[in-house]
Length: 638
Image (cartoon, rainbow, N blue to C red; front, side, top):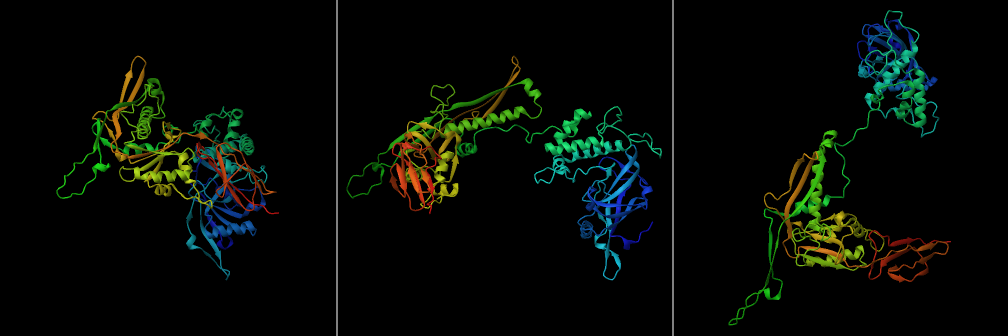
């Protein structure tokens, strides 16, 4: 049957023989032979719930290799728009909608094509538009060679009145913008799950169409089987079209296709539902550790100098005294000898360890991860943190604690002798701005190597970053800018430093170049892992340990900032009455309020312009870090 191409807007294969569809079916030759010459509606995406979805008509032509179709768009706005999309090449795929399907095994041997649809994509690679007919001004027609043979996929719909789950909106959901569509719900499934649902719906609807028949008119057996089973299961229930519609209706109410489907599994007798909705999978191979921030640990341990000897001896000569200076010589006078003191100290090693155990039964039962490797990684992380903490500030345990790391073996920088760690004492009421100034003024006391690092806490860092000028602009936009102002190479925040106190007060920071700290360990004393099996308790036991020493070896190679003890004060916010432009300064013990640098007494202050009230701790008092101590008020006019 040869068609007159001048009558049609495009032509192409609607389906081809011998190609497997997404649900496993294969269309055989002449399956749709009786549709040859028939005219069927041309629609968009198999939507036929509104007249506007009818784009035109298509004439079917049965061929040796499939079903060819000639399409003609109507003159509706939708038809004109679809024609433009096809002509422009935006839409290139065709799809058929068929029912009355008869099968032999997985082969489709008979069916009735009810409509041809323009489609975005599909599962049969044989459907494509290969001819576009262009109308010219002189009344002649020609084929667009530049658009010829545009291959794409096909999604074949099996059964009668198959709902388009991928694109059709929930019809009863109303027009609210926040209502979920079936597309929204269905897109929560992955591709494999979607294919199962496609096949499930197709089987259910096919059963409903032919439920009163056992043998088709052409001698082929009609297939009825549970979609989840490989073999026929006639004694089990299958989903009907009405049941599918019930699930879809419930999906719009709960907003989840999965929840709606699971709610009907008992009623409809569905087994192996986990094929559709498998268990959730972890995104990592092992559990994540909930731990303190440890970025600083590597800098402390790796930055230190490592010695192959566990006994560290430091020998220093103080040549800063007047007697050590070089002298001028007068002829005939006595040359004086130089005098200076020698300082020597020896640091011996200690053992730092961490021990764990696992029941053998647990190791066997835990199959999701290598629990032994995971445990050993945790042990190494915690050992490194403990060693770094002992080096920087001490382990924090009391001196009579059996687990304390001896501070004569691993000497903490923060509490080391003043000959090595120079203390910088700041007042209790020190603010972020005065702390920066104190650090800069103490810098001449630093005699360590190169440019050091500031180790401090997040709260102290925040106080310094929030320092502002007189018009409220931050002085240091980034940590890098602040580090440059403090004359340090970088700033590292140490979570375990929060709340550390000592004889000198509260610890605010340590400035040191770790090159001046030596960690010594003999051969065999470095970090080692041991494991053993306790046959009596059926347990594996693991031990990680290191035998080492640690100490600063260069005098005045660290600055340690201490805030002298004080009383905690909490500023209260002033109140403001806009009608009278009156600010009320509250009464707060240990708090000084000021406006433009002028101290204010408690009580009412009438303002004549926009005003900022600042608060600062009185002598002997201090504010907790990150305390709000400045308030802005806007002058109001009548």
